[in-house]
Image 1 (cartoon, rainbow, N blue to C red):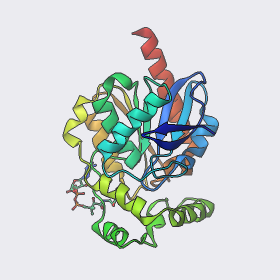
Image 2: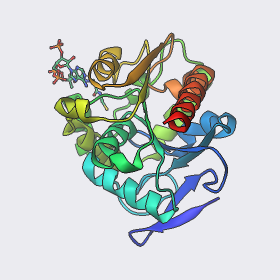
Image 3: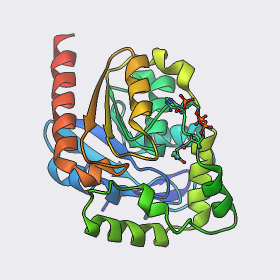
Length: 258
Ligand code: COA
């Protein structure tokens, strides 16, 4: 159960950074935590060393949620320095994907590749959602946007408990950070290979956003996963893991050859 201090606050991450394999650091989305990566942490070892962090103010990490993607991006860098990882593959979902994208642009020497799941280069949020959060409430139907209609009920029940357990102020900070994020014109600067994954039924970051990433990141591969919503890594873990495994193996081969 590793904890590390970042900016004098205790930070939790799941996984073991001393293990073999290319380090992939998973970053959750708005109001989330490392548990969103349950199936990646459990089933992805070799060629991957999966690690999943709780961003500040989330899950078991102390502190407050940050207010911009760029602040999270720099925080991620400080976190990786604390755990002694110089180069890694940032992998992010939704807000976490925005952090990963921004990281690849600003810290190219520390980035081996990029995994982008249910995300986009611009993440405007429905004003009605922000209005309710500003009043200190989480919209009661928020969870309905997260999963495909085909998702198992158990996932939706767990999702509802999780949404209820997270403070509205954390969602508000995170979704505001998303709303102000737009690096669409900077995508051609990304110099590492990117894997882009999205569910066909994603209503929060529709497939169109992923196609835009694929069209504008110079070296990318996109896989659209049938019958999954925004929480594709929980809804279709086997497909997500196969795509990640193949991508990381290819990156390893490429880096040995060059
Ligand atoms: N990649 C590619 N295209 C994008 C994009 C992205 N990341 N973000 C926006 N666009 C497109 C839109 O699809 C739209 O295209 P269109 O004119 O062909 O329909 C255009 O750019 C303008 O979009 P936007 O700035 O989002 O304005 P809008 O007035 O169309 O919609 C919202 C605003 C909030 C209603 C809309 O963004 C939305 O429904 N978002 C999803 C819901 C949400 O809250 N998601 C949370 C994300 S974390």
